[in-house]
Length: 328
Image 1: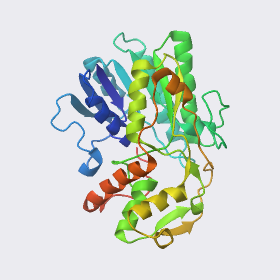
Image 2: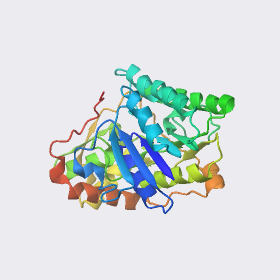
Image 3: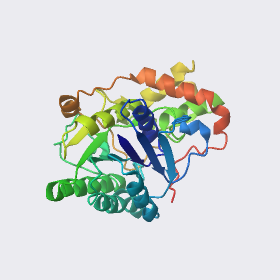
Image 4: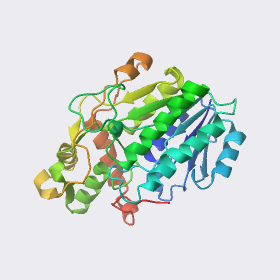
């Protein structure tokens, strides 16, 4: 099987590429990303000395001619779209989210709909479509997007559903909960808190860390993706999450504890982000019923793995940004 991953330099894609390369039936994994991963700490040695792994720098918005050439040259069985501008509070230059998250997706799927080599297109959606919830929600729960980011992702999902219903475009959508793991950029809560604590600096905890999210390790997301590709029913949307959400405060507490620090000594409380939902919580029963998937990596084991990666690469992070950057 040949897999092509859009957004191939991101942490979800890297862990998925690693998982795919571990499978015996994988013939080729082609990762397409805006840029090569310049800092070796973030590429996780994916595909090192493995001729089945190929990385091609290409922007899915501005370089689609090259992208479409790659599609036809490699003729992938499966295309997985990780590519997205993704930040919950996306009101600054919100139009950029639509360029990447819906317009580019529509053009790509229109191109692929005319190709007979494609077995399935898998769109990486988001749990943020459901808005804040108080109990685990399934795929039929009313949609309640609260940011340009989640609206743009909803538009892509609706476009793909329509393509399946009207034109039989072979697709699935996965809506994973919040991912984390080694290789994640430093503005994310687990690596950022570990990095600052190890430097002897305080972590700025927004709103006291009251927001709850369903944190799931990237490898569990990779497994869910693989199972949906091979066992998921065409046209279906699947939630993928853990059983219980956890507060941002609890996440930092676990990081601090693993580093033998007192929580109160390593954080400073700052104002929360405007427009951030209070809690995300998904039911994954449909995914379990159709594919047998359950998350396997506990939050404690996952945090340990991520913190150990940060500790190992402290010197490599000296010039890395700790804040989200909206790139071209």
